[in-house]
Amino acid sequence: FSTDFFDFLAGAIVLVPSQGLVALGYKTSLKTLRSSKSKLVLIANNTPPLRKSEVEYYAMLSKCQVIHYNGSNVDLGLACGKYFRVSMLTIIDPGDSDIVRTTSAAGTEA
Image (cartoon, rainbow, N blue to C red; front, side, top):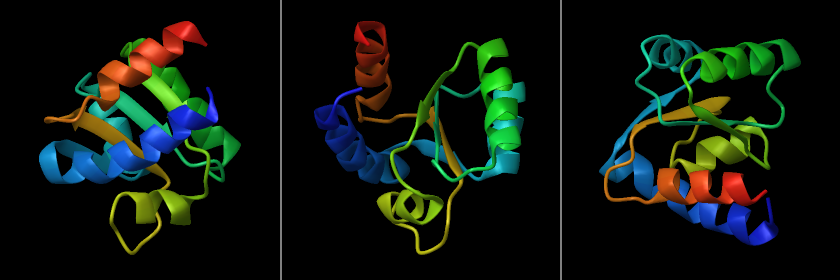
């Protein structure tokens, strides 16, 4: 992915929690992945490797896209507008945001 894409992603993450439906954290992300409700999963870059691989495995089974966020869990939490650390963010309903559509188009180009 290009740096323009990550700039778009940082701006779009702010809109999704206020307009759509998201799940924050590891446990709730796994629950939504198991029930195939997820559209997109963002994982912070300092998430432990075992957790990353587990989430990627469940995402593959539920045909959900995974994006590795270019920042720590503190950065991902602040991007969501929260004042706590967020290891992963799962988008269930994007609302008016076009983040799922844009990321899937960018994923096919990369």
